Length: 169
Picture: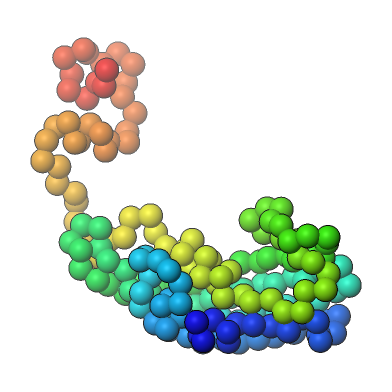
């Protein structure tokens, strides 16, 4: 939990102007979150916080790499990450999320912690299929014709014959 405290920003004391922050972390950052997806990695965050009387505009730039496990071979591999995301925190009566990019925070909030945002942005940047770089150029071999039909993405012509194995009922 100590690692996450490094990501506290005392916004109450900040003047209405741009502020720059830099964070760097690794495995200990991911250990503070209760999840199984990310355990190892190293990254650097450059945060530009633009404070005004009515809102905070945060722009995150994250660069680094994380260790993933291949969905095919179950071998670990290093995956590069680069994230550019913006978040707007508006002042209001109660804390709530309006959209993925806009949240409302109470006006007298003394500090914000940006660790959760960074973690989510890294997680969202990961590929849906985690394939080891050495396997990415290899074609997938299907064991059965049925599996081939399930994973095929090409269009089937309208005049295909009924006994054609490419026609799905």
